Length: 234
Image (cartoon, rainbow, N blue to C red):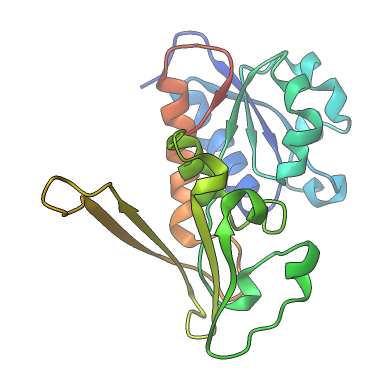
């Protein structure tokens, strides 16, 4: 069933594993759902050759307004939003989605001092501290933590603690644990929640297998929301 009588125009930034999956879904299922793919942009345009129709390849990110998108999905790198987010929001809503994990060291894409960090045993904590300090060092592996900081404004990026773990036993899996503790009550007991997620993945992959489906469902969920301009976190 179509989401609207008028097709919603979607642009995709990034053509890695997630971008390729979203583009494939939009081309094959988009029309029946009321979604029209209007452009695909990638830092290396050659990666789109032979799989993205030339008319949909956006060579210059600054020209995205000419495609009149309603929604832009970023599945490239956080610095794209840092550099071009304000410009994108002049023309369309923005959907930013990523996943963080504890996994085999080959599954990390680290920057700065963490890029040269080495595991000292079967399971090594590479970072433990405020999320604010981790995000610039692990932009592709800290987004669940960043989302938690945004969802808990009373704590924010300085009081939500992020822990990044390299575990050689997790060769085909990304694991996320979230622990939440409330303040002690009158009898000294605290409310606590602990969630544990295991996402199968290819060895060395940044993106877990279940994440592919999650991104597509998030895009559809975003299109079901009332049309309000801005950034959508799903």
